Amino acid sequence: MTDVVVAGGGLAGLVAARHLAEAGADVRLFERHHDLGGRVRSLRRDGFVFDRGFQVFFTAYPAARRELDYDSLDLRYFKPGAVVARPGERSTLSDPFRDVDGALETILNRDVTLRDKLRVFELRRELAEKSDREISAGPDESTREYLRGRGFSDRFVENFAAPFYGGITLDRSLATSKKVFEFTFKMLTTGRIAVPARGMAAITEQLAESAREAEVELVTDETVTDLDASDTPEIELGRESVTADAVVVATDPEQARELTGVESIPTDAKGCVTQYYAFDGPELDAGKRLLLNADSPAPNQIAQLSAVAPEYAPEDRNLLSATYLGVPDDPDEDLAAKTARALDSWYPERRLDLETLHTDRIEFAQFAQPPGVHDRLPDVRAPDGPVYLAGEYTDASSLNAAIGSGRTAAKRVADDFDLAF
Ligand SMILES: Cc1cc2nc3c(=O)[nH]c(=O)nc-3n(C[C@H](O)[C@H](O)[C@H](O)COP(=O)(O)OP(=O)(O)OC[C@H]3O[C@@H](n4cnc5c(N)ncnc54)[C@H](O)[C@@H]3O)c2cc1C
Image (cartoon, rainbow, N blue to C red; front, side, top):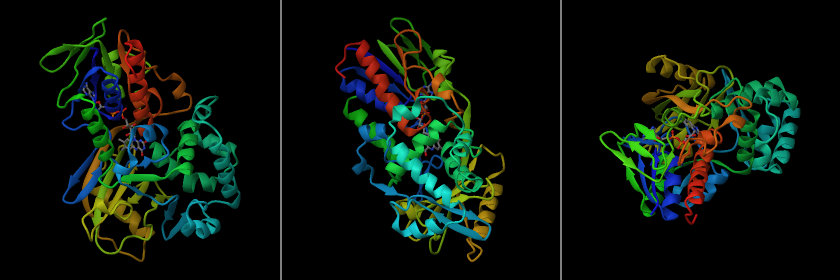
């Protein structure tokens, strides 16, 4: 039997391990943390759910569709578009094709121009016809240059694109590759934004359960400290070493580069701080829409999570998250004060008494994706010996890429070892 060791129990590692076990390999997965999931975890406390940073799931993600059972994720959906907020003003920008409630407000919205609305329509039609492969091919430029080149106004770029797409790519300057923008735009217009009712960790839990059912041995609290990539690779753990026929390195990019020496693994980080608050009384009228800060990046966006997924908070309490891009070193209470000031200015008619519940400071949430980066990403077989890479950084920085990379790595191992994939 082919022995495979998987280093890392994030989404990529779990998917790779499951497919290899199903293909007939004997698979052990070592995860250094106590919990599986890597960047996709949730803390459940006192009836609240705090995802590890503000993360959302796009239902149109092709790799996720293949690997996940959406029904059991029990998805809860955001409304399309967002509320653009600034002191004393809130306006709705939505997708009139899918959101009848927001259609009239969107048509009348003055935060973007009429031309912008027509350009969104054109872009939607164009990208719906473009395959994912076509989106990732060809020359690249920043999202900002791309939007300008397509004739979008400054108002559209600053009021909507910067906080909305900046919130997704953790880069409000819109210096991120236009390929990420096009793919994300297509996902948003062909599917929905959701969170599982039990939190984003439900995605991890489902993948872990499938791996267990396929008889993967999942070992947590065990770090792979070194890797000798000979014909029969030797894997150093805390107190012992093990050998395997093949190793799948599915750690975060920094660890993957350290373990394999592959220099093309990208390690420039995009981080963020997400803070969670409870408040009492009626929910904010933004409801299931994101609140975008058009005025300042502090915070970039606020999500009323309990309106989207009531399971995220105890009954009669509301849960909000505010996300700050980069990792500002302001103390927690200063961030909470900034959030309170922003909300007071957006909702002058309402005094919210926010209770700060939890703060997540995440140094490495995504790898930076400037124009051209995707052409330089490492191949699954970049390491020496029978060592394979799985991880979002082999494709793009997203859940979709992480899940897809697990399958790709498993397929390459299966091909090399004549397993029935
Ligand atoms: C705040 C935040 C917001 C995000 N927002 C979105 C979003 O809205 N949409 C989206 O699509 N994506 C989003 N992402 C990105 C997405 O979560 C990641 O791209 C994806 O989860 C990466 O999965 P992975 O398996 O490749 O790596 P990871 O999740 O990093 O998993 C690697 C695993 O390897 C383990 N490990 C590391 N070193 C070792 C070692 N030496 N030995 C054993 N184990 C080791 C780690 O503990 C970890 O569990 C977000 C991420 C964050 C953090």
